[in-house]
Amino acid sequence: MESSHWQLQPYLKERMQLVDSALDRYLPDGETLPAILHDAMRYSIFAGGKRIRPILMLAACEAVGGEVNNVLPAACAIEMIHSYSLIHDDLPAMDDDDFRRGNPTNHKVYGEATAILAGDGLLTEAFILLSNRSVWGDISTATYLEVIHILAKSSGSRGMVGGQVVDMEMEEKPIDLPTLEYIHTHKTGALILAAIEIGALLGGASAEQRQALCRYGEAAGLAFQVADDILDIVADQSQLGKDVGSDQQRGKATYPALLGLAGARQRASELREVALSSLDSFGDSARPLREIASFIVDRSC
Amino acid sequence: MESSHWQLQPYLKERMQLVDSALDRYLPDGETLPAILHDAMRYSIFAGGKRIRPILMLAACEAVGGEVNNVLPAACAIEMIHSYSLIHDDLPAMDDDDFRRGNPTNHKVYGEATAILAGDGLLTEAFILLSNRSVWGDISTATYLEVIHILAKSSGSRGMVGGQVVDMEMEEKPIDLPTLEYIHTHKTGALILAAIEIGALLGGASAEQRQALCRYGEAAGLAFQVADDILDIVADQSQLGKDVGSDQQRGKATYPALLGLAGARQRASELREVALSSLDSFGDSARPLREIASFIVDRSC
Image 1 (cartoon, rainbow over the protein chains, first blue to last red):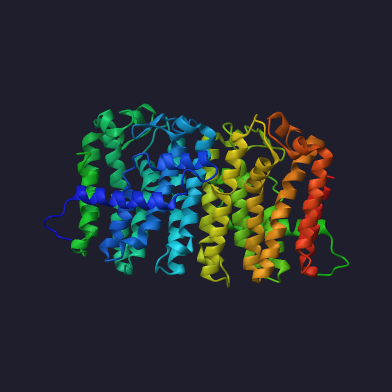
Image 2: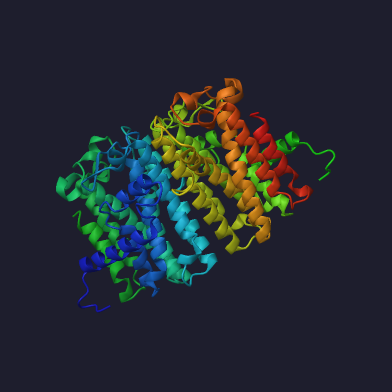
């Protein structure tokens, strides 16, 4: 990596393309029966996601000197899980959103029944892919099983799905900071942490490196959500692809609502510092992780 | 196994209890946060399922002389997946059923949002359990990865979920026998076949044994659905726990509708014969599988 010429945006773009083409390769094509289902699955996967989780996974692998190609299947699997969670979150019974990233949501295009099943299909596809021996490369079966375990736990009832339930439960109710942090460390944070941990594991991290990267993952994951809450208030619709202030309107608690806008920005900055200091023992190979943490926070400040 | 005293009903009851107590052990308890979510997951798991898939898995293992305890985690995982599929099938956007096995459906008790998430949680829990090193016993990691792959594939978009999509698509439309068989070999058959194949694999089956058991699984899986269609017409509500003729009312194609009642019974009998003849090379250890195939068909004839 030529440190002087290194820039975040071209890096993110190149990584996004790498992940997109791997997703295209790993997902059943739109002709596979039932075509309508695979169409619906692909619709949401290719609806303009920024691939934050896969890119963080690749960057964590890179930080410990690992081989990025070994991580691509797991990177695609985590994006499938993220995408399924958005399809289900957008359903009328949940957030009832008509648009996501500027495009009609899955159920607006395919109907509710197919959207529910497309979500189920994507979640399951993640585990089909990860248990497929032909994509492992030179990673051991024991390591792959650990990857599956980390990914499943972080996205299940004690992880992402649990955070979503509490988020729904607390709508229109008074909420305190610990509950808000519970929601976000589970709903968004768990999968971001899993991305980092899996990247570290597949990259061959030592126990100390893995621990340091997990500290980074926890802080960056929460920073990401705080920044998202701030953006929900200050961005205009074209930047966000959804209605400005839509979380507030829905009676959802946000960091700015609890801490004020300045307080939320302060919290985001503190989390960036924690994320950056976790990487102190890493050299230049951790530059992408550092720049991503700063980018996450800066876009909201 | 004392062949002279062997009876199916006590066998099924004992196996059901074995599976129920393992499910209770493996599922997060109702106090685990978020409590409402784990409550909802447990509600559907313990709502009177007959544990057909886990019992078939145990019986396939037994047929090849395997150790039944090695199969329990996978048996519980397949039941979690079956249970999640019922929760999602019953949703208003799908079959819109208020009752299942005589009890209110998950969304009638917990609301739609929590029901969707309870389904997501159960599906994910299956993979958390299967990738948990502490439950493997003396099974190798390579075998466990194969188990995960079989289970994921059979329940995903080219298996159970795919069958469900085509089933929804064909409502109120004219349907031919090949399409009906596509629906059932995917929607119900794929998971029953997976139960048998995983039982064979974990029991240490030879390649020939595994192939023979898979033939059994395909035939028994389809027989199960044909019998279910017949029961939907001839049983009374107390036997069925749902409205009699409810599939017909919904405009769903059934075997009796396409083949007539006598033709459907004939098809069920033929499938039983295929299932039984697949077991010709097995001795007394396959008796449970034989009796189950007969029981599936006889209850509808």
